[in-house]
Length: 113
Image 1 (cartoon, one colour):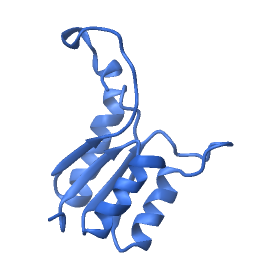
Image 2 (cartoon, rainbow, N blue to C red; image 1 turned 60 degrees about the vertical axis):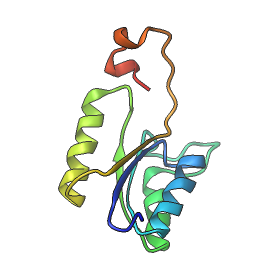
Image 3 (cartoon, helix red, strand yellow; image 1 turned 45 degrees about the vertical axis):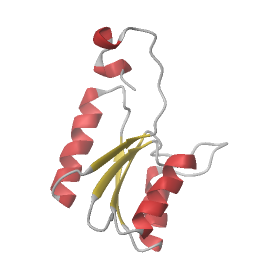
Image 4 (cartoon, one colour; image 1 turned 180 degrees about the vertical axis):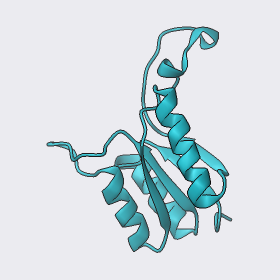
């Protein structure tokens, strides 16, 4: 079902997002690991780059993109890189966390979850 599909997963450098990425990679999807974790955290394992390494170890194709979902420019860059590498986007899994207490129509891209 997922063979050849391209999936962007936000918050995929570790935890639930990474596990979703690994499962979909095993099923043949191209995975874009979109997260802020470009450098190791002192207390939490994993970066976007180590997640892509793990995706490739299970036979998948991956792309690491530094993305802060609150920053429109970083989102736009990730979309462009994804289209350039994989030819398009089929699925978005928004696993990254962010919080905004504004109404939906008043929420800016910076505060969009």
